[in-house]
Amino acid sequence: MIRKVSLAATAFALAALWPFLASAAGKKDSVVIGMALEPPGLDATTGAAAAISEITDYNIYEGLTKVNGDGSVTPLLASSWTISPDVKTYTFKLLSGVKFQDGEPFSSADVKFSFERAGAPDSTNKLKSFFQSVAKIEAPDAQTAVVTFKDATPDALFQLGLSPAVIVDPKSEPTNATKPVGTGPFKFDNWVKGSSVTLSKWDGYRDAGKIKLEKVTFRIINDPAAQVAALLAGDVDAIPRFGSVQSVDQFKNDPRFQVTVGGTEGKTIMSINNKRKPLDDVRVRRALAYAIDRKAIIDGAMNGYGTPIGSHYVPIDPGYIDLTGTYPYDPEKAKALLKEAGVATPLKLTLILPPPAYARNGGEIIAAELAKVGIEVKIENVEWAQWLSGVYKDKNFDLTIISHVEPMDLMIYADPNYYFQYDSQAFRDIMQKVNTTVDPEARKKYLGEAQMQLATDAVNVFLFQLAQITVANAKLKGLWKDSPVFANDMSIVYWE
Image (cartoon, rainbow, N blue to C red; front, side, top):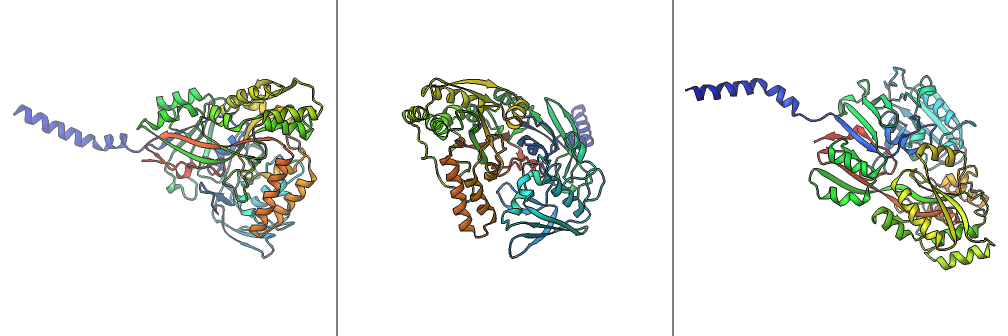
């Protein structure tokens, strides 16, 4: 009898506790995402680092359009648009009732402000040249924005979906680098420098009911071994751009995790300072290209993850042509070109390497390969902030290794002041045709010519397409497999 009473009492107690137990065992509503690089700031419209968009894009900030994980372009802050027959004028109808996270209403005036600011003479926006191709921006009413370009601009909808084209509130613009404000589903909470950035769900978002996560923490872990340890310990739930390529099989064989391998727009290159002697001689740059074995770098630094490229385009891009045969691995040809250029060996150069594993590991292999042709490379490992200031901003370098992740960004080569300082009127003329040609097949032809011009001039040593390796908790859903843009869209992520 006592036994029966005890069981009944236990059953009653469990029934009473069930709502609390169910809640405790319910779906998680927070996530920790690992990232390799810490952004220098959080204003996507002024900073060059892709790490900014990894945190802010589609989470805090939004643009008129959105580039999705499959590369498609869909409406975001614009509900619809019409395009003039000459493909110069785009008329956008904007969503109504949208507010910024500081309470300010969103309107066409904010579009006009954001785009004019991006194209201003003192702008540091990565799409500055694109916005400077705008003839005028009109806001005839609060829900209509009309953007007229100087020439036909067939890829405007794609460009307007990139992180430098997000719409900002004029009132918060001065402090967006440290306290970003947008129209997105998550608002900025805090930034612990060197450690993490935390966002929380914004209840004022227009579709707040569709957002499953209450809190998102981006944790900075640039050491590949530390990334492995953090995943195994459960300190992070996912690392969308996993750095320890040698550990991928370990996670593939662990049922607690899921591993996906996709593509990115990352063009991993050995950038060359085209203004520095003797690197201003195309024969020397070509010698560098012949001296480097892409396959050895992909195998040795990336454990086989990566696709060779021969110019500043990747195979998933429209108009891509395979130029990997332009400079096959040929150390003897490299030596002959250096001799022809009158370069006395050993030629001493500096190779600056930022933190990502592809750069640090790849740099060691490249240094050994260059030594075989009479080029002595001094390796300098720097932190990300040092790379941005010394290499990107001040152009104080000979060689460096970096992955350019902005999609279809050939236009950077049209700017002679860009950090590798390539100055070619011939290339600029080709890009003018690319940017103003409406016919898709003709445009692909010009894109091919642009890629060939870069290869012919050996502007940089083009290495490989960066793979996107994602390691995540097996129960986490919604992460992108591919990255046509470098973003972590948390609005579609949820726990199973």
